[in-house]
Image (cartoon, helix red, strand yellow):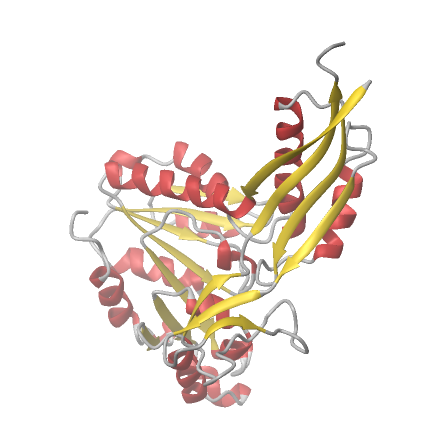
Length: 219
Length: 126
């Protein structure tokens, strides 16, 4: 004979990620490391922005570069002579806290002050996956279309800093930068929105300042 | 593919629970998926069907209940359900249904929860 039993599980699959993210954050804080994650579509300018920041600040930066299968971003960043861990997600469309936890095993935490995590290019899936960072930067470029911000509200609502990049190309692609700024402000009125043309060096100083501003005092 | 890792998370939870309760078979699993969890329940169902092959959950019925989005408006006093009908499931534009501001706090609808499982286990007298 067998008996039938109903077992309450009540396990939240998303909370498992959050628990690991908290663990990552604690590990980083124990090592006095300020962590910023960068989210944005493919080609929005995340890697370029990280490269530009590395070249313009004194802090020792380490980078976790997420990508689906390639190491191109990791190799690009490595050429700036900073520690880089390339993180391939395989077929996954976002980084999660567990992947980041493993990448931290290969990062020389005693040699860096600041960790940048570059997510896989995607404006949808990374929304709900906390990684353990202190700040999230969302990068969008005008070439993605000026309706991109309003079409992806959740990622912009999750941002601590919004960067609207490639404004030098707005006219060429018929995009209204002001509309994108207004949409971003409407979705997330409390965060700073910076328009930039990283290719021309415009906006970089403001971005660096905004990232430094949000660094927790104890780090 | 986002759904695969979610399905694996769900399935691991089910099998761990079954094992710790000495189950010989899993017959039913109740799962709650929030409408803002950014996953497609049909894809989850398909993947669970693949994952359960040749396990004690092979014949289990995986029931997925979609949970509506609940918000608290930061500008007016609205607190409650927001209908997503007619919107694209994967990029829903969430606004307060009363004052239409996007300045809202999402209270519910982002989670994926394994609620409970029904198992068969040997009678203790045997």
